[in-house]
Amino acid sequence: MAILSVKKLTKSFGGLTAVSNVNMELQEGELVGLIGPNGAGKTTVFNLLTGVYEPTAGTVTLTRNGKGKEIQGMKPFNICKAGMSRTFQNIRLFKDLTVLDNVRIAMHQNVKYGLASAFLHLPAYAKEEAQLVEKCMELLRIVHLDGKAGELASNLPYGEQRHLEIARALATDPVVLLLDEPAAGMNPAETAQLTELISWIRKNFQLTILLIEHDMSLVMKICERIYVLDYGMIIASGTPEEIKADKKVIEAYLGEDVNDA
Amino acid sequence: MEQFLQQLINGLSLGSIYALIALGYTMVYGIIKLINFAHCDVYMIGAYVGYACMTYFHLGLLPSMLIAMAACTLLGMAIEKIAYKPLRNATRIAVLITALGVSMFLEYGTMFFVKAEVRAYPSMTGWMAQSFQVGGVNISMLQVIIMAVTVILMILLQFIVKRTRVGRAMRAVSLDKDAAELMGINVNSTISFTFALGSALAGAAGVLVGVYYNSINPLMGMLPGIKAFVAAVFGGIGLIPGAMVGGYAIGMIETMVDGYGNSLYKDAVVFAILILILIVKPAGLLGKNTREKV
Image 1 (cartoon, rainbow over the protein chains, first blue to last red):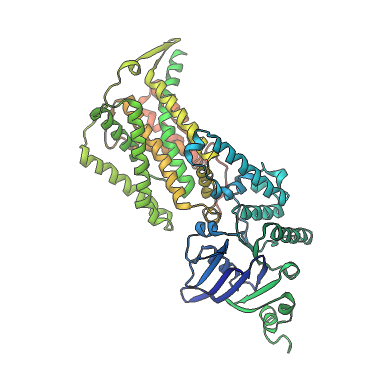
Image 2 (cartoon, chains in turn yellow, blue; image 1 turned 90 degrees about the vertical axis):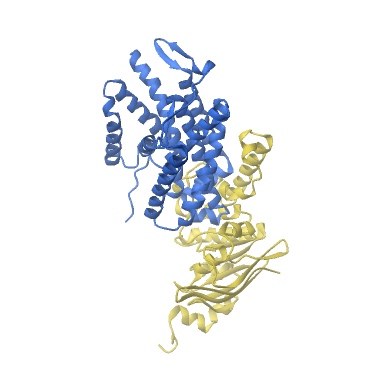
């Protein structure tokens, strides 16, 4: 069943069409890559999916618990609640908050208690709070940050900040996770660790993942399917093997007439 | 020594008021980087609402204060919704000028309805009018009430900001509005809540000033407003503990200058301190010095 279905998604900024007629379909539990040269519009697609930009045309349908919902044009926080979460190309953690608080804030939409019960320290508040911290710690354990829960996010080394972003995205309880260049700036060892983490998360959280990445070793290794974007249009889609052999993709990456040169 | 202690007590009461107002400035600055000049007029409206409750409805201090806080909460949220929200993506200077306009509107709008005359707050009766001596220092019950109410409100505020869902949302929004929204936080309602909190504190300060100094007028917010702003900058604008420290510090300094002979210069000293702070430690007492990126 298609969890995320994107139809004829288009975004124009004035006269410039950054994304045009993009169709994508992600099946439940799939791990799909979105690749393309710099400036192809990959991050714009993410921004359209998460509501940062409003699409000029097209529909985005997100299915949660068997119920499809058109989410294009909704506010980002509502799209997040509908089940779409993301990480950022340039890390956007809440730097002056602790590692735990970063995750806790993201989980905050699932908290039920109101102000009054928090004030009066009602048992419901204490219980929810304890459960919340426990759930956050679980997530941090998955990304190997449980030992650093009390540290400020800005004090973490780069690779761990990326992991924390993933944990924070998971905390919003998504059905679709969008990862924007999770391996950017990582060394091969860190990338390998991240690759493992992503596969593990997908299996254990039963997530559908869409991934933007420049690191081809990572993309080819873990993605089942790949969409290739160039000049805002999908120019190819298929399995990693098909993509590797696709002439249009090679042209987009290496320039035209590569065989004649 | 006795005189010093006496001034200390007076300074603490005045500082409490400044701190309450400064918190509103600092929270709003923290979350949308706006110096909300209309804030000092919310405080003035609070004083008038309290006055109306006490004079016309003969309510006690506490109920009057609660009503004033509620009224100011609504007013603060309305100001944000009507004046600032449409300008969310406008330049900062546009919002700043709007804030000045809202301030004028409230001041002279109030003047239109209640006239420019100075009004006397009903004086306190019973135990609230008492004062007592501790080692030669005269402390009035009102001063005790002011300090106690301020401390209670500050503790509540700290609790909301540190421990509750909406408080955490406030901190997240102040750090990265866009990322917060993508993590499921309703940024607009969080900003609205911040205005509500700050305005409630200003409302409480308005009523406390009314009963303490006994006189109110539609322009009463101007000077305390600016001094509370100085206090917020002094402590580090955008930082809640900074506003508390700054409020008490400015209140204390002002009272000390006043008490040791130079009452004419007390305002000058406060503003001289602002200038000094801006030169020496622009981020304020508790602020981290960050270099502006260019």
